[in-house]
Image (cartoon, rainbow, N blue to C red):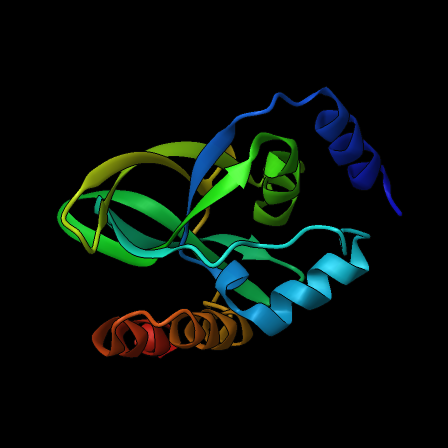
Length: 174
């Protein structure tokens, strides 16, 4: 394991008993990639719940983080009045929040937590946390990662997100 694992485990030990709402729109929705990441980092104990289809309100996708791992820029969120980002809303146990922070890059400072309004299929709008690129690390230099877009698209399909959204994502690296 690495020092990030140790940080996560300390946070888990100190966590409360509640839950947090987590809006996921990115590669965590690609089950195969997520299970591989989970295993590589020693989190086989963590199960991502099923979640609910949802749309984050007044947001858009922006490819604003150059990733060595993905070989190009990967997606974050930008404020975009009137736009929506499709994803899933999860209820995450407080003790497991640090695992989500690690997966999303908050442990390394790549991303920051972003409060969002999320509309469920029922029409109910709830508060949740999503992750966006840390403004201090944002850049649009270089190409969008084709491998990331492929994982993003696979995840959107497997999560049951709308076909039009999947098509929009798949066109992102063109």
